[in-house]
Image 1 (cartoon, one colour):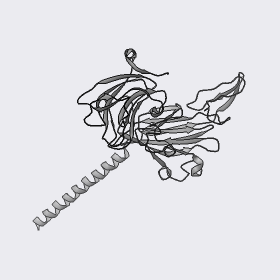
Image 2 (cartoon, rainbow, N blue to C red; image 1 turned 45 degrees about the vertical axis):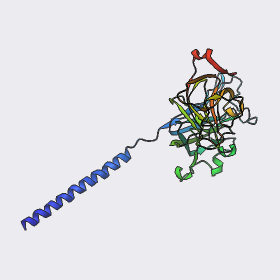
Image 3 (tube, rainbow, N blue to C red; image 1 turned 180 degrees about the vertical axis):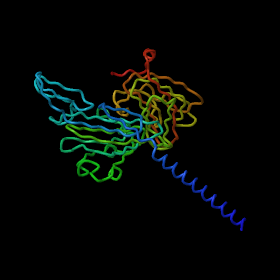
Image 4 (cartoon, helix red, strand yellow; image 1 turned 30 degrees about the vertical axis):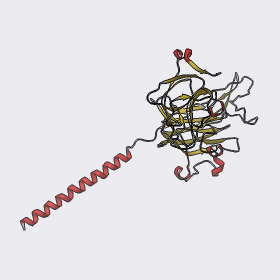
Amino acid sequence: MAMRGVMMLFFQVLILCFQAKAWHAVRRSFELEQTAPQEKIHLITDCMHVTSEEGEFSFVKLPPVRSTSKHGAHWMASPGEPELVSAEGAASHLSDPELEPGAASAVCGVYFVADPDQTIEVTMKQVNVECRSGGLMAFVDGWELNGQYFPGERDHEKPLDLRVQEFCAEQTGGPWPAKGGSAASNAWVFRSSQNAALVQYRIPERGSFVLSARFHYNPKPCNIMAEGLAPYYMLRNYGQRRNCTLTALFPAVVSVIALEVGEANESVRYCERVRVDDKLEIGGSVGLDPSRQLVRASTICGRSRGRMDLDQTILCGTTSVRLISSGRYNNQAMVTMRMADESDLRLATVICEM
């Protein structure tokens, strides 16, 4: 009986220890869940907001508040806009030349750029932008500046009408999400095809929006917006009939390190005057789309047998390296790209009108 009592006491102690450990694990898990870092919130204050960060982004525009003083009418501008004062009582606004007269508002944007091997997912968590007042929002698969797009319209796998998706609050029946509804259930999710994406907005009077940005791994990057931090960039067509472009929005020095484009038995050569379907174009342009107005510094093709270090200085607003592929070969090019400085001016290969 004594032995049986000892055994019962031993099992009870084991059970109590297990419960204590289990409760500690549950409590610890709960504590971790409660203390998990919240999503970083960014306030948008610039009309052209460029970012390489993930997190939540919010924008609010309030109508100007009018107050009177002995100096005349005075308008207090919304956050993110300059304060405008008119002695004659007339307020001025930024205006888009493409908008109809009276639609006093600029077209602004949140420009996302991630690592070369990433895509960007944008979730619209709240939209309060009215269509009837001239407000509108759009997600762009890529970037848009002055009517030109990156990647170029000829080089992207999707047509432009599928790359640009417009929306506003009335399409969801009012401010979004509706009262009593969850943001997640009503959210619109957009995803880019490359490491660049844009959310444009036009808010003439008042409005707001909240979005969340997440970056995802892209196993086969093709078009790349250079953020200026990568030690080198790889352009590949993966054996497909497609054009891939590396673009930087600054004058740059481009160095081709290695090249495998076209026939395997061909050495690297300049092929501007030879009609070939597989080649690497290096140059610059004023706008975003190099397929339309690229001023070429060189066009090369063939296979390198070692490190090349072919340097070319492109003094243009936009610098691009464009891999053109027929689909008959597995083409690839390794290049570096750095911002040009004063010491590079005398070695300029291409100079564009700025």
